[in-house]
Image (cartoon, rainbow, N blue to C red; front, top):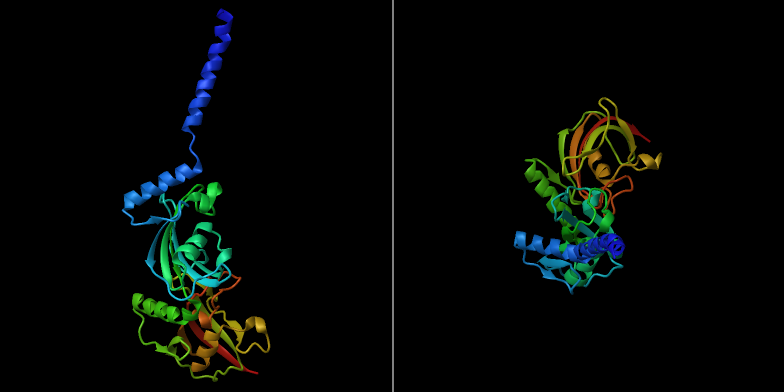
Length: 299
């Protein structure tokens, strides 16, 4: 009997530990629910759960027009925060905060569902609390930690009204940076001539050498020539299509002559359009350029 207790007692202890561990284990659904509900209560949010999915939402601005489909290409602007406060990303003209592609391709399932099934329209916005299992799961993504539930606000734009959105963005940028003295063209380009120049005139057939600085509206410089070193541009692309500048430059540079300087605020339609560029320009980005033309060559 003594031998029985010698071996049975450790077995009972091990079994007790395993049972206790099993009771302490929580499913990811349970953890998500606990975290999201605590966040809602702490921030006094007026949100509604969508069909027992664990997604909570508030339509902050109802959309309009026809219902969106997963096969629609729509422009989105979004802000992302993890509920634990370890990650925040706002719209600062970064590719991580702007999207123009098919809705069905959007990476987060919870956002796709929220837009298509709840907001349903463009020209509106929605705030969503997305449980981690419908976000980036246990592995996280980039700087977003694993098992992070997210607070996401999405503005769904109407791509046919991007020109108006760009113009509002440019006007807000000018106000925020106390920019005055700009002239707006019929195409939506804003320009201010610092020096008209006194050399050769510039036409659409010109090849120019320019020193410039280009930045997004968050102040980040994305392109800049070295001091005293210009870059050659073929305005119509006939000689070298790879050196053909954006439409905003084509419209602005003929307003000055060789030796002249101009500042241009370029709407996305005259820059890299709705999709942005493969080189990293975010979708539907407006741009701010300071340009000095140091040489002009006619074809």
